[in-house]
Amino acid sequence: MSGGRSVENLSFKNGAVGLHAIAAGPQDGPVVLLLHGFPEFWYGWHRQIEPLAAAGFRVVVPDQRGHSQQQTIRRCFLRGL
Image 1 (cartoon, rainbow, N blue to C red):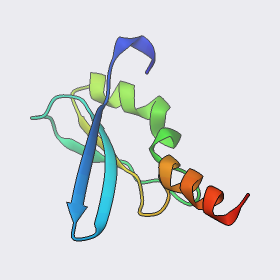
Image 2 (image 1 turned 180 degrees about the horizontal axis):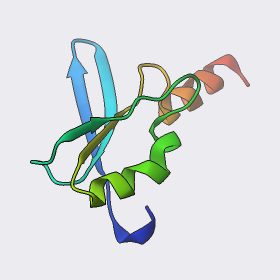
Image 3 (image 1 turned 90 degrees about the vertical axis):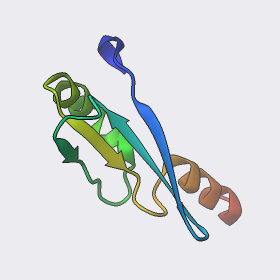
């Protein structure tokens, strides 16, 4: 990300369902949850993550199930697109 700040990659698993999220900011900061819509993934919020984290918020941006970049690429490959 610009400005030298980094994000953390988080992985969650519940049974056969694996989810990915990005987090930034202090772990003890107030949580801001950013949700994207179809067909975006976490990067759609990349301009908002850094300013919120710099303001002291713990920013968490989950990829909605089936809409992460990796899943989109895999789906296109399997469909032959």
